[in-house]
View 1 (cartoon, rainbow, N blue to C red):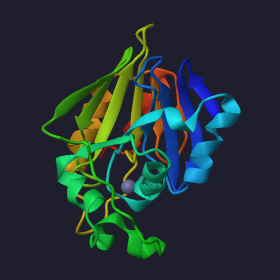
View 2: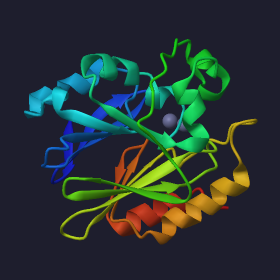
View 3: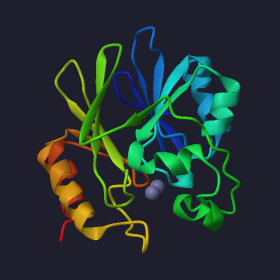
View 4: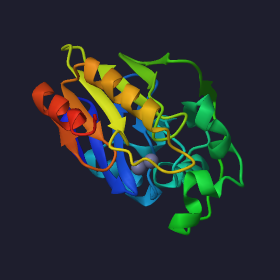
Length: 216
Ligand SMILES: [Zn+2]
Ligand SMILES: [Zn+2]
């Protein structure tokens, strides 16, 4: 558990990197992806955050390393609400999508969770407390991949890019969409990038350098 910025934390890595935003409001704590271990998420209590206060979880895409722990979170706190893009929603809400989610490859039995909302179109904004979570559709890695941009009160732009590194998976990914999405992310001029597997990048010049590595 590491504070990246005021109210913004890197919870840890289990499958993917899991991030958390404290909304400082009745909307509680917002998770960006769940990873594979709810035990890891529960450790936020060591930083004086209450796991029962996790009220929202925004899922960036349907891969098992980002969603496996969702069902355990739901069992722990029935009130938690999940969000994902409609194009990735079926694999998150239903059984039988083990090829898309890569659950088969990881040897994990995925327990589906219901979404409170299926995000649609290019941009949907979820307002929780003092923060607007701009959910940008950035397809390519998966059809319904999203990236989440949060602007702090000090006007710092924090981008939760998750699997912006790819990879491109035959039958699931779309390379052209992926390249268009990367350019869209570059244009955001984010100050801090939280990547799904490769750490946290800042300042803005480092974010640009990182995204540019994947643009062809
Ligand atoms: Zn992925
Ligand atoms: Zn991933």
